[in-house]
Length: 490
Image (cartoon, rainbow, N blue to C red):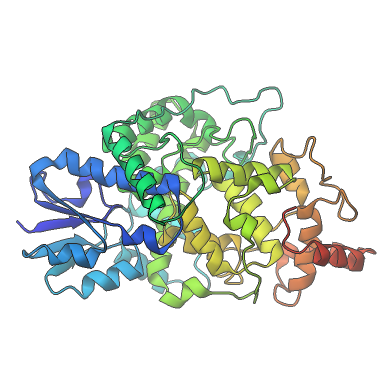
């Protein structure tokens, strides 16, 4: 049996054909030398890789090298590897004469099946259409050809703001892992690398996310039993005192390959059948995994490499230093300082702060989408190029002009006020667009619409906002104010 080379995001048993198969694991220091990763992300990846080596024992050959190429020079036998998750890695392994590339694993809908589905579409590829196809194809939450409960999407019921009478949802916190000797070794190595000149972003801290399959399975079981029932209603809510809410916090576990998404999907489906979780919560969770996660993975490979560099809004401003350095203390706006602080302290915030605070702010300011893909990739524990290309380029920055979403995810402060506790006590007023207390999101929204009205004209979902823009009597003053604010921390 050929030795299987596993990358650091291919660490679950489903990446092997036999539990006794010989394995190669390579730790490349150059990966962390080339780019400034969040310290906790670097810790998570290295800890997961080293824990997998410890689990496999003599079955695995573990090499620490400056580069993957240096590591491969020390291996004489033929190797095989599952389809990597980035174009750069795929190009590299295909150039190695002794390495054969197997089909991708760790996702539900295969690349060929997706391509057949996409090739048969007319017009833009939409999540909703793919999600129906995937539900039927893989027999998930369906009764024959019809969706369980009679509707494909129950999203309308899953948009509740956080409860006003409590600081936290009434669910137990996700179980946190216990660090061990391997974590201590990783932390010591990262400290030494920093002394040698390798830079990291964010704060070091206790490891908060699983690095072994056992840890990931324990967190999945806990989520399905205790947190899934309230996941749906509050999946779009934001709370400064409760960053986890009822989210699974399993995205990094799926993206490291510790869990296969189908085991979580079937687990959620079983919870519904056993009346342990309501259908809206279960459908919302399934939508994220079987729908969105598989959708952005497949889109990354379906489109050519230039898709990542899309910039249909023709923005040119570079991401400012305070954002790059996660300097939340430089920010006065409560929503942005809390969310940016969450990235600095955890390397993670859930999907709505990413989209409607971070992404929304960047979209309004006109920052370069490719720089934002890189920023999200480096600073989030679950960030990879395939994830962030779809999420940032296709969704939050609207850089394809509707190829992926039907409207830009831009909003004023009213949305943040409705869905969070951020606006209370903030120096900015979400109802004001002009003056010292003007909310940067509210003013930025009108500036964004004005700047892009020729590029997004004809969008039916923005027609009402465009009419409002035409009725504003102070639009010139708002534009001048936002130009003066520039990219300074708000």
